[in-house]
Amino acid sequence: MDASERQELLAHLEKMLETLKFGSVTLVIQDGKIVLIERNEKVRLQSNKHR
Image (cartoon, rainbow, N blue to C red; front, side):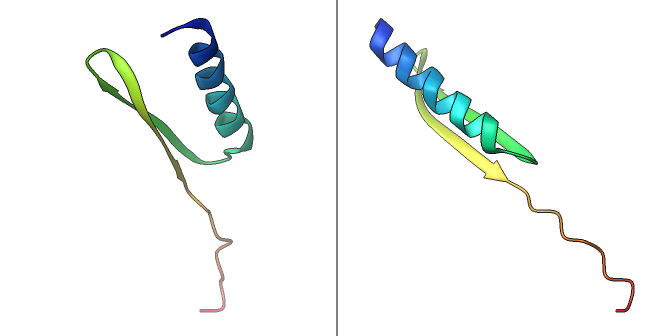
């Protein structure tokens, strides 16, 4: 991975982490290289006591 690829990867990760409130970011690695970044976000709903 060259310096420009590393900067692009870090920029993507930083943007995902800045906007994520609840959830996870998963890196998929093949042959020692990151090939996929997955973001799973969870949305917590306010509980409704009148149900």
